[in-house]
Length: 256
Image (tube, rainbow, N blue to C red; front, top):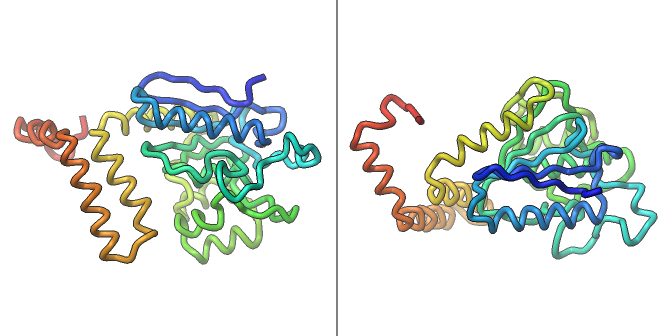
């Protein structure tokens, strides 16, 4: 059985963790295939936005702890290269949207945090559930969680490992949308199509500037933003947009 399924409907690429019998827990093979899938997505000129979801009603229950007894199946624990969960150390040039159903916990939460946006079903649950077993967050959880929801709230979740339901997750900014059960993938793909309609060079450079600013003091971050903006301008797509504006399109904030 394939651990990762890839379904393409250009310009959207949907990447599906396919281990429903273990709530899509990730072992070494799954992590490697997941990283490969995102490498391929980022290099694919026909794919603009990716959606990450899980098969069988759950997003991802984290690392497959049962695999740790088998050195060939256990998640990688090297300091460089792919993360234990696969793509968690990658910085893509294109956005990824997490479609969260069921459990997105432990390393599964870290995968969701790695995505640019998160859409969560009403009955889904997030949490640092690995707190119970002494399994650390080593796929960016201690870095991305404070950046997304703030230090104080992140400490609450990191230290207690408690469950976070959809309404709280939305209220604290951990997820971007709450949707009806069974619709997360559809809604994520719908949002992905909206993003794919925008001028891509501009959106991607704005995204990278927002992601990279943590690395710089303020003045350097402003310079980095300007450099990204100039690359977007040099793509020439701005002139098409300005032409549409002059023709009267997009009045009153319309995006069609």
